[in-house]
Amino acid sequence: QVQLVESGGGLVQAGSSRRLSCVASGRTLIFYPMGWFRQAPGKEREFVSVISQSGRSTEYVDSVKGRFTISRDNAKNTVYLQTNSLKPEDTAVYYCAAGRPDLTTPTTRDTYSYWGQGTQVTVSS
Image (cartoon, rainbow, N blue to C red; front, side, top):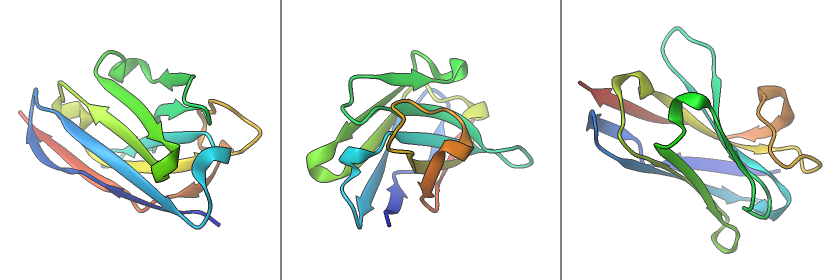
């Protein structure tokens, strides 16, 4: 079992930055691709970004490319999502998730086994 705890959310102004963190316990994260998803009110949870086990491969949803950066520190069992140039449409609960170990950069919800409780990011205009 893997337990994931996100942090770093908050209320920010448009154009600002926020670094989200996801700390894991229970098992080392080195076996898992790690993803970030988000869910806005009234919308389905959507893929945001993923990083492979080694950290060499990443994927992003088009709407955040050039603004968000995913990274991981396997020694600290932690994954990060640096969010820059935030927009009101980025407002959502952000979830960290651990993907299937046999995949490298999965982008669909059904390929993730473990989820955190989420951290709220609210961007005011």
